[in-house]
Image (tube, rainbow, N blue to C red; front, top):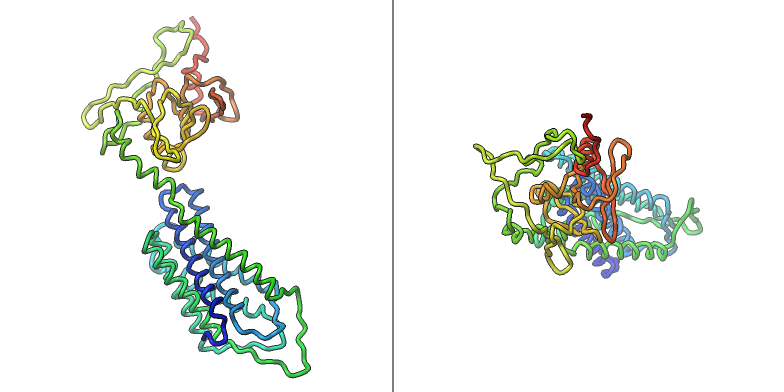
Length: 414
């Protein structure tokens, strides 16, 4: 199977397949617990690196093969082969990433992906042009397709497992050897028959020399290696989640309990003073503690934020706004945003509702720091002070409450 092949390029092709598999599977390990937008980005990244790994491995293997002198690569079939690979990988990963995939869906996706990988291989092979004709052993073709389908099934199973550590590395190694096995099995069934002396095949279309292809492959190898190194960087959100243990010991945080939302602690009631110059709506505590109701929590005096050297705690008096970011939040202290391990609901429950107001499903603001409020579309925006002032959207349902808290409502007629 490897007769006449350059052993160094063969080893490189296997390594590229392994690195591409590890990077793609590693990205999928981070999909769980991310919002829809991040899910799509990670899914696209996984498909990209898997496709790049398969395609680059294929052409490194082609460069390793003992091809006749004067062989060139037709650009159009070469590009089409990559598009086929990227398309089938993306579709297959999408099918198995929606909901809980049944076995039948995984198998059908594996068949699609395996046939797509085999199609990519043979389209790329027929991108070769030179003074020869190409034939294939039918038995080896079928065997290579079966290996491709089995490889695809194993890869999709690794995708669904969302493994990490040693399991991920072992899956990537097995995947890399399987993809390489499919390629070299197909190459073993390929036969190049020299044309009759004096005859010459005309090259139709744009062609690239092996040297040009080597440069392209080298660039893609660099991309895969860079993606592999980036995949080794720990996920900062996992680091933040691991640091939430000390947070549970803070005042007002009761381990094992779910804090009631701050909005449940207060009820809007008409002002008792019709001539009040401040607001027609005031906030009155709603008593809790009845049967089945949790006790009201003491507002937390500080919030945890993640820094480069660990978890810090900032006083709530310095907080301007809190913005939802997936299962976490970004806290703005008037200068910059920093990540907090609390969710937006946890932040709302822990912050003092007399000082903070949830003005949007994704935003909480410190009302004392509001310097501007303005209608914008169906909602509004508020601007918060600080060395770096910033603006926060207000949903239409919260406009009246924001105006009441800022004393912007009109006086009642006497």
